[in-house]
Image 1: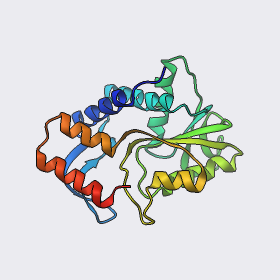
Image 2: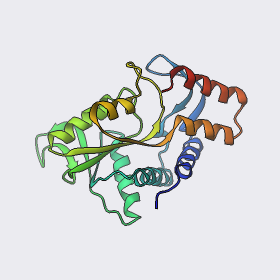
Image 3: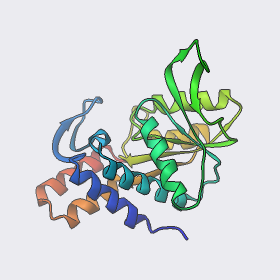
Image 4: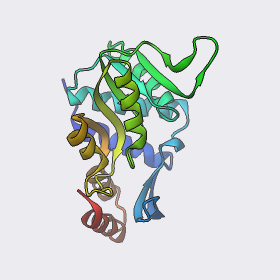
Length: 216
């Protein structure tokens, strides 16, 4: 039975908050925008943290209803993610093979850029966040070059923010490539978390103003 979205999204945000992976303040992004919150999943770097994080990913993927038979983790952040998410799924009797890539091809041993199980027919890409979408599109090209189909993209946080073409990167993937995207949490969830945690009214107002200015 699908898990209620609020259950895994709020647990994920509490985890990010605990590890200081979710911060509130003023943070200049690569786009030049100044965001009232910042997410750095690399800060969740312990065994217990990764186990709980992977559980959130697995719950979001299961809840999505996407039909898939394989997982792919883009180098580099996607590598530990795809391995731990596969372990989390196995705890619920879903044994899913996973693959990841190297940045540079090996010319010895097994060679090539792909490591792990052979790609399945319907592959879910597992990554942290999507900003410009460049890395995910590279992963899509890799998967399709092997004759496989991209069944979906699974990420931690959807900022629900417009990009250069006034679409969010996730919306662009859905519209341009026909690929569904799944996020463990969204900007709306971040606002809900800030409210339940009793953050200051100014902080919450700043996040809402940012959403009004740049949200989709």
